Image 1 (tube, rainbow, N blue to C red):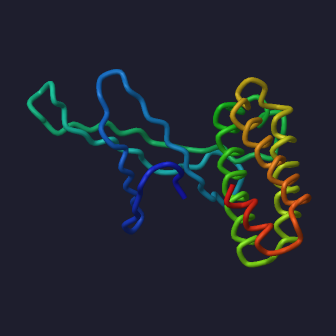
Image 2 (cartoon, rainbow, N blue to C red):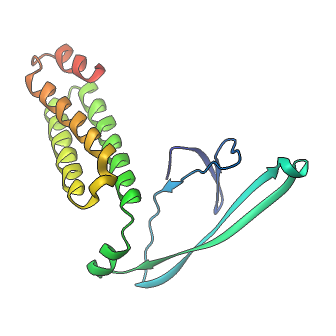
Length: 169
């Protein structure tokens, strides 16, 4: 699952459209993968960036990098290798997905489940904030928004239109 970009999969290859890039610009790609198996270093595959170099009359160019992951249960190693910016982005995406699911629950009339989901999501986001520091600024704003929505759900009239009005806001 790739977040923030249009992508498609063909067999064991994934293609991501990063849009136009100009000199000095960068793109970050966040994707969720599931890796199973034995602990230790494992190859993930190869990332290949293909582009047309306008400085060379549109000549096709490419750069490739092999990726690997180290599977471990060692919490100290995990803590030392944590990229707080990436961890914050992952938490932001998870919260956004949960808020979308909460809206769907409200639309289905499952208000109690919506409140529970939103409460758990907000709590999980707040838990992440303790380790993220400045990298969690956007997550903190998103968590505040989720908590405000939760407060509105709590105080909304107990009618279907009252709950749905909160979600539309």
